[in-house]
Length: 326
Image: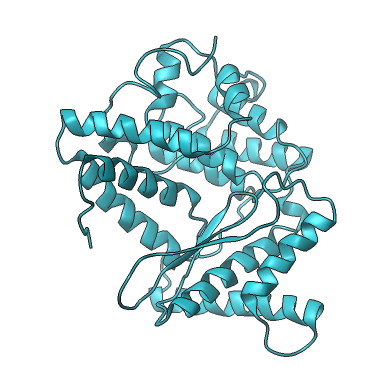
């Protein structure tokens, strides 16, 4: 069965309040917290942490100081080994890093170009996002007084994550898969048999990892974002109701790029929801902006919350003028 056939575009209308927390939701049942935990099991198996994650008892100011120190240390180390001592142009360094990866044989489908996007604003703080060749997105993690500083801030956190991504622990290997699946089983008290059954959530989780063996987590990001968006938009639920198996859905979307066609279809779904429940897009957009800002300032990967926001803004622009939600 083709998982994208059937009426209603990407899926039936749903209550968006049940899909506000991000999560990969490969399992067909369970809360969004469960879905997010699956994602964390995948991205950071065996207790690893994201850039920006910190002890909940640590003050916000202290956490931001530690993040800045870590970013500066990685950037300076990279500069020392590639340019010698002296001040590094972090924007150039990030571009050179990915060009170096491509020259060494990295499979970059869209080339090595690093893409920056500065948010429209007439006054500080300015915000800039950077999307890496593998699909990962990072943003300026400091309050930046100029657009140039926002660009440098985004490049710094992206370079830190790019360098960290080269560590062997970030590559999807058989050992990585076993650790991630074992952590998922422990988190949700699943039985070992579930991991070998693709009809279960953990089995589908293993299937997705095995299908991407040899890639790094940043290179895997775009595929993960596709499935996060399908969950958030209600599309995975719609496919399940049409009796599509997880294997069929995974096989179809594993080769589907996150492109303007997919964004436009999801925007149309939200326009339909807006017609049924006026104000739903604005409400979802306000929450999405808050989520995006919190993740950006914490130095986290941003592709999913940013794509959500962009899809909602696209939907709103087709209904009428986008009003300020600040």
